[in-house]
Image 1 (cartoon, one colour):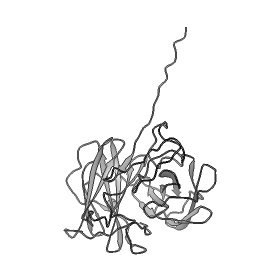
Image 2 (image 1 turned 60 degrees about the vertical axis):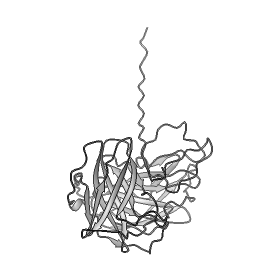
Image 3 (image 1 turned 90 degrees about the horizontal axis):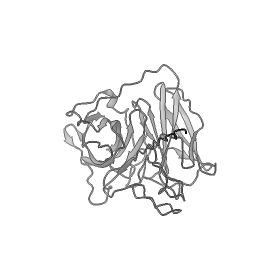
Image 4 (image 1 turned 180 degrees about the vertical axis):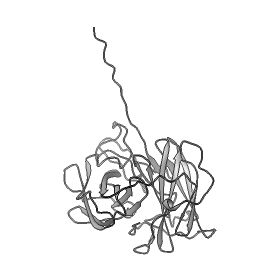
Length: 332
């Protein structure tokens, strides 16, 4: 009699949750009833399609690792971009019916956020494309050097959950990947110093506070950018699993200070290195500070000034004066 074959079950359950003081997360409603989107929805977590409960669904992958999820697909018109040239990058998000999606929820003042980052995590852009009536999105895009990039579309269908879909873009030419910068508590950008306090704890919630100063003095008059005093995008080194978070509180709520510290509550799925990109606005200009942080190992070394890889490209003034709850164009 033959010995029965053993079946191995391997479930990759990477619960990726970034939330604020109100415990923001992807809410799960009753079967057949999509939950109401929270004030600051979690980004980068896959969820069930509208009208389908997540209760019985298997654990989802982190956002951005797939072009398609829950019936929605990110489709760029081209995936080849000449390095150093600005093109009109166009794409659609198709829905479960196979048609371009045209009904989105507004999240942080925009219907869709586009993040483009090189796979070596050396180049980062946060873009806000324009939508045509037929569901086609377009944005001016420049890939600064040869290599492979990942484009993330961060959005929520009307009546559904937040999703992040990803697609690779290619800039042909000689390519030498940048080494991941060393773990550090301090980043410098455009004359500002940003100090990171707190540690990433795999599988558990932890607080991260990023404190902004200039010329040794704390910056106490940060300006709202996209409805918040800071925006944080985290990418896991290696596979670029995507996490997008917002800080505690909101401008104008009567309790949240306009700096120098911005606090986030974070939960990461695994040990390893993560690249953190903090957007903040001061005196009408948006800046991006970049860090390498390590989850599940000894705390990072004492503060040191980061090198060129931790310095964002030349900043640009915000397109329009920011108001709480509104988004301006942000291109790095």
